[in-house]
Length: 176
Length: 179
Image (cartoon, rainbow over all chains, first blue to last red; front, side, top):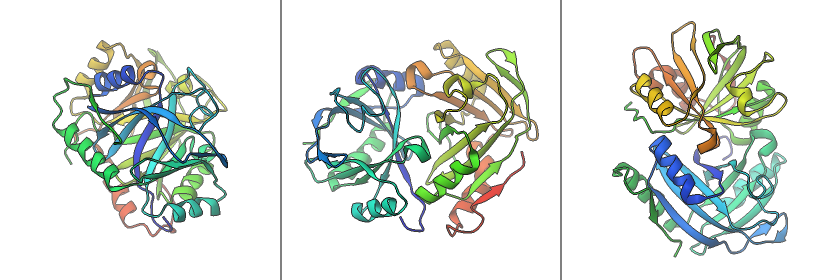
C-alpha cells in the first residue's frame, strides 16, 4: 500500500435481520442477488489481543466494482461488530480492501498509529484483519488477504449481478 | 461511460473538519488527490419541503471506481446531513447514483416510501441533486444526481479521474475546485 492508493472493494453494514435487509437493498436499490453465507463461525479469531469468537451470517452482492456486504452478528458479547453496533442497532461498519500481503498492510497501518481490532480467517485460507480507522474515517477498514476461493466467489457475484432478473433476492452460498 | 441506475459510485461521510478528514484519508489510505469545493454556491435548496440556506464544503477523491466524499456543514440549521448526523458528530451519510432518468427514479423512490429529504441545484452548472430518505431501509440516504447534458459521473468527474491516475501520492494532495 505504500505510496499507492487504496482500492476500496467492499462497503459493509451491520444489520438485524439479514434476509429482510437483502430484500430492502434489492427492492430499494436494485442491487442483487445476494449470496447468503449462513451461520459462519470464523476460526482463529483474535479480538483485541485475546482469542475470541465471531459468529455471523453474511450476504454479499456486487454493484459494479463495489461489493455490498450485510452482516448479521449471531452474538451479543463484545466483538468487532458489537463494539460499534450493540444488539438491535444497525449501521455502516467498514470498507473492505484487498491485499496480497496482510502483514505488510497491517504494518503500514501500525506505522500510522492504527491498530488491529480483530483478526482471523476462514476455513479456506482467506485471512482478514479489521483495522481501527474509525476516528479517522468513521468506519473500520477490513484488510482481506483472499484465498483463491474468495476471489472466485467475488467474480461469481459480478456474473450473478449482471445476469440478475430481479426475481430471486438471495442465493445459497457456502464457505465449504 | 455507461452508468446503469443501480451502480454505486460513492461513499459519503459528514465530518466536523473537512481539512482534518481529508488529511486523515490521505494519510491512512493513500487516497487522493482530493478535489475540495469550498462553500459551494447552491440554489433552490429545500429541506423536507422548506426552503433553507445551506453552507457546505465538500471534497471528493477516488479509490478505484469508488468516490469518497466528505461533507462539512458550516451553518447551523436543519438539512439532510443533520437528519442523520447531529451537529458535532460525524458519520456515514449516503451512497450516490447518477440515474439516466433522474425524475423517474426520484418519483420511484417517493412511491416506495422514501421521501425527498433535501434537494437543490449547484448554481454554477445547474447540476441537480436530491437526497432520498432511505435510512429506515438502508441505514443511509441515497443521493441522486443529474448532470446537465447527461453523461453522469464521466462528465462531472473526468478531471478527478485523470488527476487520480496521474497522482504521485505527494504533490498537491488537496486541490480547490470552485463550484
